[in-house]
Image (cartoon, rainbow, N blue to C red; front, side):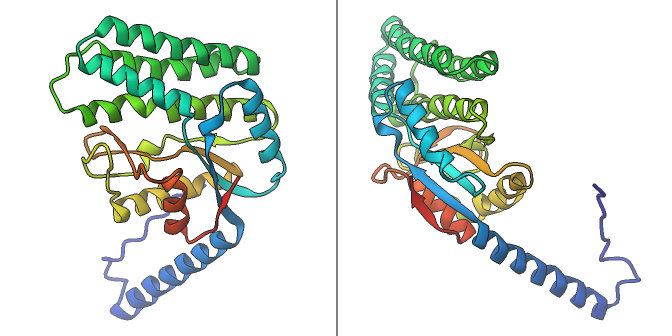
Length: 262
């Protein structure tokens, strides 16, 4: 692919040519936006009831029905994970490091077991990705709490969405449902109200256009996480906790495309 850069400050660019160039660019962008709205959807999936391999296999069957379509799948965490991670946060905040680590081992073992039950060829790669998120949480749990509880709740509880989405994405790929996994924290920029963050719509819209949309040139399905984002300091935040899947609505609104429950 050629990377052509246009220098509009060149003397060759008369005011009339410059106006025509920007008008053509605007029209092509508007056309692309309209084209995208015709072919891409956002699927919202409330994963609160997912507790095991059977539930993930059933989700894969639901997704397979939409073979040939292009969509973003925004996954929430399971209720079991969210509840467990909130308890881990409280143990950590109460300076009971051993209890917090023991509680987190239960979650780790559950996901290692899930990967073993669902995956074969991609098992090690998925375990490596899971281990990255395990390490994120354990690094936090070995620290000492010096900030308010909502900050730590956001840093730890966001692991629920991340861990589940890794296993789902890996299982779909191994089942022949090709998809691309992305970390919502790399795309959704928020303020530092950690427990109920407000999204920077302008910044997030630019990232969605620059990071997410080009992925559809190679993959039909983008897997990401619901209701998590990050500040400009790369600290985890949780979004509208009154919504099952605020993020799905956010992506749909930014791209002006339909949101569908799965």
